[in-house]
Image (cartoon, rainbow, N blue to C red):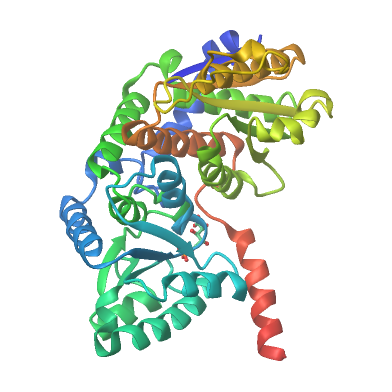
Length: 418
Ligand code: PA5
């Protein structure tokens, strides 16, 4: 990945500043120390459990053999990463993966059930805590659905991915002899995409999970060994932290020119929002999908309140293309004859970059050679590591999410008292 930045005249000096270096080194020392909790993901690309990895492959092979659809039931960090990767790299080597349990909409669940009624289905319940209401409610309905379809063998159609030892789902699996995969106790939801949480859905969808882990390892190696000046994880973290803390920017948008990146944007959004948005601090993060959003939010980005920074992710070699031929002479797009969609998309990208640069807005440009499994793994780790450093620089705990509890408590009280 190539990282460029624009409209940050302070960057060179800042990245050489001794005090900043010291501050970042303190964050790094803390992150790699045993005092920092929930950091099992940090060394994971080199220290992942190979037996578990093998088990993921075996289970996925069985699912591909005996199912038409895998229904993944999970919310937040228990589904966003898997959804992102599958949407980006969909292929026909595996089976369809659908995500449920992300809301309390009966219509949504009924539509999934209707879709699956004449299909063979396996269910992957994913919950680190094992007690998330959305997941347990949908689990109840899906278990009834499976019971009707597969009678006494219905439990063979369930895989539970949960904490190694704790929680209701772990107990339930043990009691009912249900197949399980594990989320290591020291890895939180939004940092868990490279564990079985993401790997099983990826493997069932036909993605090469070896390559995903190789990409993550390359990103890890660069993060761990590259000198400060060449360390993109640190650069992104330091600059976005400076833009927020010293330059008072309030929002970061993540723009991409690939509609299949939308779910990746949602994963990125959850990672940064849940990690940094606490103690009344943090950049508000918002993914945008161009060129669609250039015809809506694009107006604000170009001319609205000047408190935005933008991160653009751009794939240089998209492998599918269409050439536009035989355009009528009178058509206003005659000048595009012979051009391809990719050429046009590239010009849309460069035109947007130029227009946004001209506003003076700080912009990060992340150029990816090709969106494939390797680079997907690379990006997951890149953003996880940057987010952790950025959160530590901000002075918050990037690995908890105490604010998420409030709606749950209110909802439970309302349901119990009515
Ligand atoms: O990042 C997180 O920790 C959260 O978003 C969780 O993933 C989310 O709340 C779901 O939790 P669980 O996996 O325990 O069901």
